Length: 471
Ligand code: BG6
Image 1 (cartoon, rainbow, N blue to C red):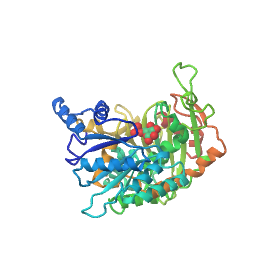
Image 2: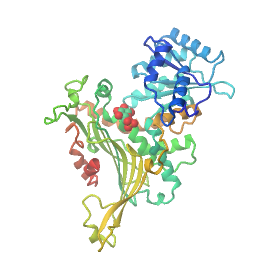
Image 3: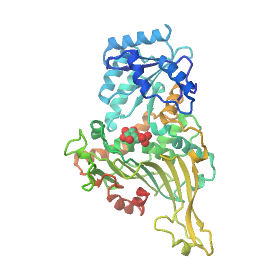
Image 4: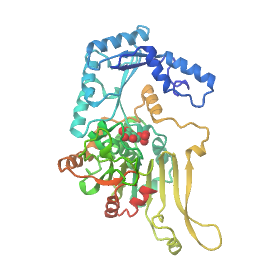
């Protein structure tokens, strides 16, 4: 889509690197299968697709072979017309290949820094997993730091490229009405949830080594939390925004076992086609890897003291949804008696930030139900992005992020100290889960997660944790 819209430099070239032997033609056939034109007329589309594929080539490469990287360099130079151009290297390789690949790339000079205005730059994009804990992250960073300067490094968390996540800064800092409410005086708790119906079929090899906390909570949900909870950044540049995120992450106490519930989806006897996690191909029969986690974090700042942040994430759940619910404190109002008629769990004002599948912002308020008499009900002041902006395409997270790599804007990429702080919050509890061999609570695939969430919620004054989970 970025190519078709002309967002990329005119002379851009794409080169696929992998171990599989392929020629350019076979590579293009593979790519063509996945290309679709949205909102572009069919004739223009086939021209664009043809033009895009013409710019794609393939080079076979063993990641740890210096000779292969030298050959890749030669191939790139030929495509660049003999003079090195600006390059983006996207390294999507399994963690065990990362170190050897990075070392050989460094030895062959592939990741030249390009730090003068006239010298072309090379930027390296890396994807999670960024280690399994603080120590393995530090080791990864040692290898990465040896081959690549921090300014060249773009660590992707694709949640930062999502429309509504990008909008969090705007919501908070372009609307002065929210700032006075955005604190412990008015907020009773915040619930950030990521629920998926799918299990781990096809990815068990990776997932069983990592589990849900490392897969989505330590990264995607913590990125949302830091944008929600941080203080206003000094400026809107990448460093100031990331400084503010690190500052708040460093104020979060490490998670303890008492504040954590872990679960694992099981098969449901009544549903013939339902598979439990342990029945997924590649999962060891005695695996204790959590596919669900609920954690309560405390943000120890003046703004948030005493406000629990509940994070829930799981696979094999009852719906696909990622959202934030900020619950405001109940204060006595003139209408207490009438409000008592409202269904349980809906009495508070709530700000709902829908990340997906429906991008939305909604403020739940209490309102008079039309008709005779003073009956109250809740309703939402609702901004649904797709309804409000019909015809306006919402870009995929990766499109936004990869364009930012080309532009050199690092605001939406994770700085090393953010990862260090996020790992410090989760490492002790992850180690305890493993050393104490804690058995996750079972929950039925397709349900809303283990009932133990209720007890966790109650301990932290969140009476409707489970209700929200189902909502
Ligand atoms: C990935 C996780 O980072 O994020 C997956 O590895 C998860 O397990 C995915 O399903 C969720 O991303 P999205 O964009 O589909 O919400």
